[in-house]
Length: 466
Ligand SMILES: Cc1cc2nc3c(=O)[nH]c(=O)nc-3n(C[C@H](O)[C@H](O)[C@H](O)COP(=O)(O)OP(=O)(O)OC[C@H]3O[C@@H](n4cnc5c(N)ncnc54)[C@H](O)[C@@H]3O)c2cc1C
Image (tube, rainbow, N blue to C red; front, side, top):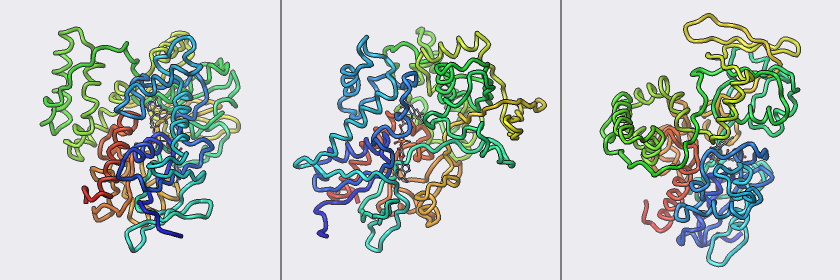
């Protein structure tokens, strides 16, 4: 086989992150001769986990105007959306996630067609299982279908993994038909009967999705929600004039308390002008990673212990119609919040007995037919069982961070080996980069990473970046 004229770039994972990266790699003139391989086992590449949802009540939690794949064409998605059936009665402010999945799939599918002067993109509908280094600095990406790709660059865009078991050490409940380990599994809630007793673990955006899906399917019985902080995601406010960025006022704050105090001072300034907390928080969004990086590991840990729950409520907001639907269910007594942590789940015939431990109070037991784990994705790469992750971890090429948020990387997204040096030609983007940025989950942040990583790889090819 003749050696390709340009570099071989293998992107593992064809969700939003992998798709955005492929599209931005194609825009780099220095990579015109590159060959890009995209590895994605899902039948339709592009939507990934988040946007494969086919239920119309599962909405994007970001306005259309912020979801373009291309930062230099901010209205690209909103304009595409206008031509879609969902916009017949006017463009929805928060579009269904399924529509966004179609957008990603269409853009990616177009990139799979060969075009003069652009890199070739080849899709492999399978998983990657290993990516060991070769003596010449390249890597062999081994695929589950038995083939392999010798690559100059390998990028992990693996996305979100289902939540870990919420309670132990007795794990028999994992095999119980009423325990739903993966809240995003298609058709998951459809097998729940209308009068069956359901308990949700967690009260974030996933719990809201599950509640709405259950109601849509005709579920009638009250639902118990167990939450550590007892709060639902805040609602998006109507779009307003952006608040001016004030990162300079936090740029020297190396403690969580200092940053919170500076933030509160700004809230008071804004309140004096009748501006609420939402635009103030949003003004800092481009700099959240920099604020996080100013803190020591101990300070980051302090934030995770004491503020992460409150942060998630304010930062990851819900479309107002979803917030209103949850409020209506609460008012009708159909959703009951239990403050606490799920400590134990014991199968008992068709039932699951759940021990809930509220902070500072005696534990109590609840008996239900279904427990749905909505506690958020597994971030701890020590516990992720994906064969590719396991093999890279065991080789010391992929190192989980001490706070168990993701993978240790350098500023460009190169994975750091055990000795702290960047692994040859191995990068990641998306939620795996939470140790460096903390906020590395949503489209606007991942899109930025895709643009920067494409430029990084192009720069390495031209020699502008060593
Ligand atoms: C249910 C849900 C809803 C969300 N809604 C929003 C929203 O409205 N707005 C927003 O900004 N963000 C949202 N997010 C955040 C989301 O993380 C990002 O928007 C984005 O979709 C992440 O893309 P990703 O490619 O990193 O991950 P994913 O979408 O998870 O894609 C990763 C892909 O990698 C593939 N993969 C994994 N391992 C391998 C392997 N070994 N070999 C080959 N392929 C592999 C998987 O099959 C998967 O398709 C949501 C997240 C979830 C879970």
